[in-house]
Image 1 (cartoon, rainbow, N blue to C red):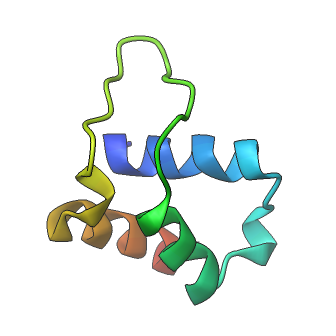
Image 2 (image 1 turned 90 degrees about the vertical axis):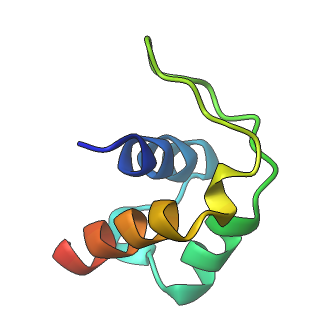
Image 3 (image 1 turned 180 degrees about the vertical axis):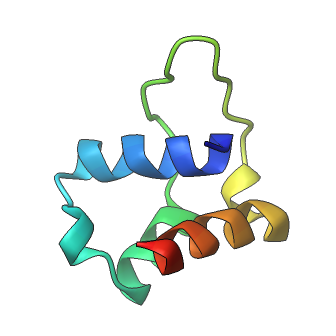
Length: 66
């Protein structure tokens, strides 16, 4: 699982958003959030990474897979 997907899942959990509630507004909110997410062990989130097109593409592919 990519770091982008892990980050998205952590953020969803912190926000109390269920998988069935994911829509384009939730995804946009994630892409714009100011990250203070807890990091899974050995993961590092870079500031501003959620605005990176490759990062966003990985999240969108994951949501499409769901």
